[in-house]
Length: 350
Image (tube, rainbow, N blue to C red):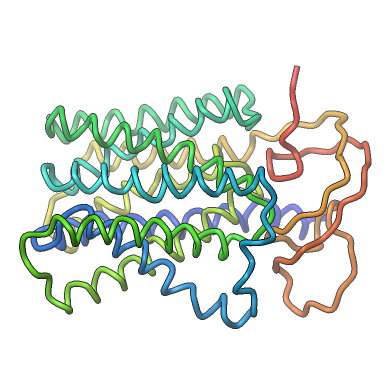
């Protein structure tokens, strides 16, 4: 039982933390690339990089035609993730980044947490208890402190980034609920379509030719900061819900600040350190915010990353690794146990 509790809590939390660090790297590096590449083209190259980086995994699993597995509900979720999270969101972020400092944009990205929490409460049955909402408020306070510390970074830039965060809030929930294909597959197809569209737009409006070296750098950055990062985030969100994963992922701005210090020689302040401490408190509160009540599981067949240490995945097969993904069935059952709003617990609450 202790092994199960430790794995259940720490595994998705660690994945979300690594995802945040990888995504945080994108902000200062993108700031450098924007000196030579327009926002549309860079957004396209970053997402194409995500698909290119994941393509070997798709080939090894021999699942090129995985898109045909999607039912209408999952197809709509994937389409929304591509349009809002893969096309509109990145473009707005990069336009805002072009006219603001890397640190300012990193800090304003904290609004994505609030957007994810509010949208989850209103539309996606992503339950939060009192402790969870306290964690959200503390994380918001952390972001406000950082924003005040940074100063005014441009009204237009801020508005663009806030709208982008709302787009990513929807994207977070859409991707967390896609259960017809694996996290790797959904990220691959999202990067392929969003990357192709933005790259075509970027090339059509580009006034200057872009060197092959810069294109390679952007693709490599995309494979790491978008491809690997998004896959890890989706796996985490499917296990603990989009809001909780986003709480942890909201540490990405801090990693963005750290990388900005190391790469762009920007400085760190006492307020940034205090803000980081508050975020750690909010993450701790979120991990404690589970609840227990009698609920029903409907019979379902789906695909997602899982292991056999929890009570919902007791099927037999010959996989040799602890954590894996494949198509599997769940029977109809009614029971009570402590849980988070993962793929199996998006039910109504009184």
